[in-house]
Image 1: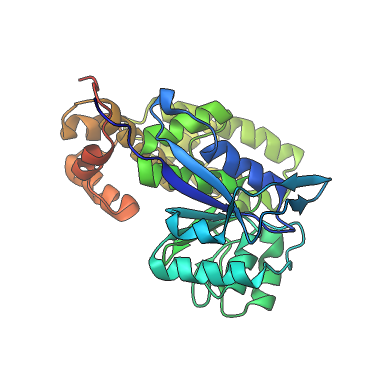
Image 2: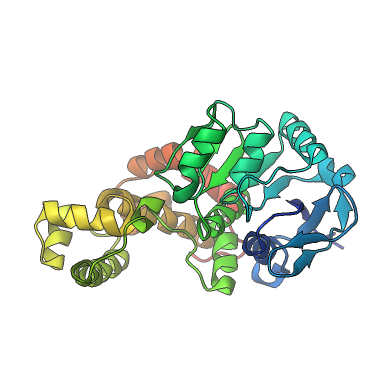
Length: 327
């Protein structure tokens, strides 16, 4: 009889001042049993300094089920954001974070959780993100942190940080995708009724669209839907711009405003995702996967996998191919 694989151990750090939204996101991603949908088993533990309930805003409280003594067992440590972004985490927790990082444990902070990692000294000299409205505060309070603003999440030295609020969902799904494959992340995303991944940066959310921009957004949405249905075709910016009824320059500008990235980078992200799905679900040969996902050649697909996923298509298939996949 085959024994089930051990559950992957995840720690949610709990201390007064953490945001209920981020706790809910972490719990939704790693706290639900989705093994019937080919998602690995997770053991999510709420880790605090002591056993007392942790107060959160709105009259909520989170009851820990483990203390810091359990933290060395965790394979991934998650730090929620903060209601008050200058809240200081308990010193024993900051020390435990430093020890975990020294052990090589992956640590990820959602939104304002970057302030907690900065308090622990884990972001000194590293690139980091937080909500765009908090970037200046993070720079001012922690000048050794290299605060960025042009991504939804970023990794530096096995420490992950994310942009504001919903970008925490993007980071959590990316962590699942990196460790367990695109199909597992997609299954979780489908159950949450959210996108498996979003391209672009949080810059797209800083300015409010005008009514004219809303009309442009409708045209761009139709073009993006068309592009996703024709990824195997040689899509050019000029052709997509013509479909939107814009000049290439105007199209590129409006596209970047709407998505936070360029049309070609957006296409590349979706082509990589399409190739990942085919590698996981099918036994198709590499040249056919490259063709269907729009790379044109296996060499080009291999180059993009190396630069964006730090692996090869062959290695990805070996790690994440589903049993009984179709040709």
